Image: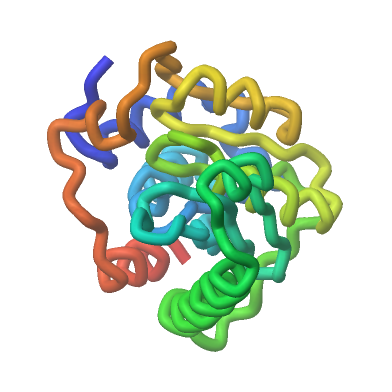
Length: 211
């Protein structure tokens, strides 16, 4: 399965979530940046409110694309201890990387939400949307953090994800919806024709359009 771009993937994903349309308890949360483009299409199709849930990957030394953990906006930290040991990540690096991502989360919160209050999650059917799942570390931290706010139901919806990662995340969410979960998985971008970087400006525009 191959998607033209994130917008098309979002429209296809929305079809799988059609039973949630016009449900007043539904809240769509996009994972910035690329996940917000997908979530925007889902929110439009379901007539549901859209917001962001900001979680940042903790990158490995000398290989920032390798996720050794993640930090959520409410301070929830997930660390893959097995990977940290195998890579040999020093404790001082882990502390500094966590603080660096904490600063970036604060910047994004200000840029994306401004003075708007954070959404109320308690009692809601929360659908967390991203453009894909590779290792799952970032999404795992998000799900665990959201769960602490006592949503009625917690769902994860992605166009594509690694099969083993989705199986792991299914233990954290009440339901995982994915259009494609190949056993052999290289990178999320490999399943998109256009996987260009999403800008902060586009995220802000989409949130304003559907606020």
